[in-house]
Length: 202
Image: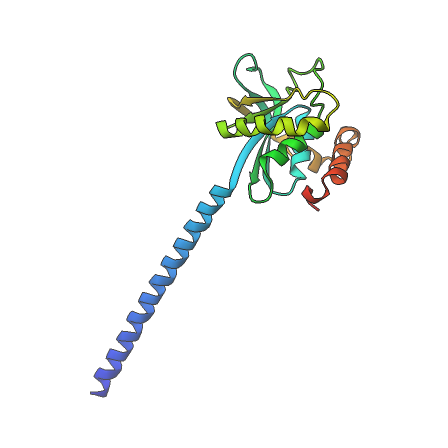
């Protein structure tokens, strides 16, 4: 009789352990799905162009909330359908906003200058969805008083993105002391540190 009881007890404990294990696995699957879903909802991307993409890449890699920067060449719709240097910025919307990223971009390239290299260095924010275009239209009048001349930066739909060669990616990170970086990138990062201290990664 005791053997039967012991067998029933062991069997019951095994069933309980099995059920608990299945519930544990189910709980963590649900938790992971929630984390992935929440992460997707709080992540967004936007593209910028205006100066050398080595500079633009370095600038946005410095900003808090920026998760990844893709450096390459961008086309939009005619008459802006030629490839122009630019970057795609992937960011966490709970840490940094589109308006803040736009402000950083305007202050780290010649956003009021229609110089002769504008085809190669098109001054633009390239949007992926129409609400980003609307956000740009609302933000520019607010940001314009920070500049002595009219902002020429355009909001354009991104049509094509071509990633740069591997050897040129993360250019500043790989070559912080290169003459180009010393002359052009370091001053931009110093300006960021002074003007947007709380936005810059330590």
